[in-house]
Length: 147
Length: 151
Image 1: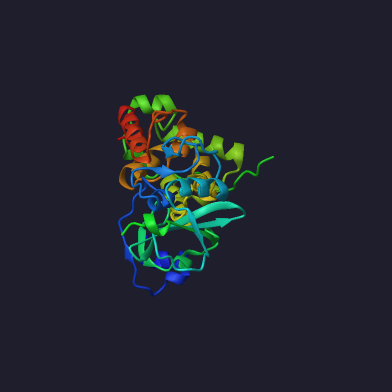
Image 2: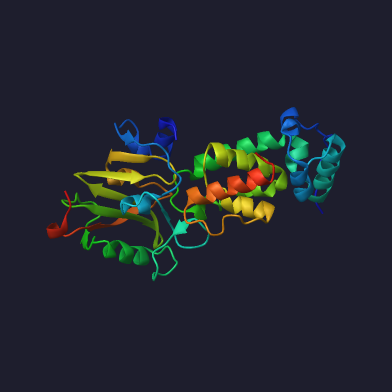
């Protein structure tokens, strides 16, 4: 995605100095947020997807929150806050998740669909029509925080 | 009753005709055999659907590239394939029928993306049903295309 296209899709990123990684269609933002670079996390429907066994095959925020909490992100923060520990921001519309960003090493980053990873962003910059609002931030508790 | 377009036939572009798909492929999917056959299929398609393809004079390749650009712009950043394949441009590409399969295969080879739903719908084949990742699914579809004489 050229920078101009990125700016068009994400107006709040316009003019900001952000880092972009190469495109990768093999994983998505949920996988990226959970540290998995080998799978596309999405409820079953087509092959090539990964979805953790034992969880409902839906895209509700409730289900994905359970999955994220299972990975150790158990402390809920205000969506407008700046975390102190590794965290995941959930973006959603009408009770369904649409996107994720992760906070690690003091900075927010995210993978934009099959497109680039963007680093050193403000997580609220990703609030666009397609992603909805940041509805929740789940953080690791201090004693298990990495880095 | 579909509306019949007024414009005359458009001759197939040289590029599409020169790609040189194997007889096996042509036989399996009923693709182009010669110019007369193309025109017959286009006319048949036009009468049945009133589709704009003939009326606009737009070649299959040009239409594909135009829709591809729209699809990329509107969905590249989306996190769910479910939403990507429901996009109107993606569905329009599927609506172009099996003629577009070679172009999708080349796109999948050169700029990997989530073409698997379209390929399954267009070909009836399912060579990657056991794929564990998009990358593996792509490899299996490209192998299938190679065996089919597409690449």
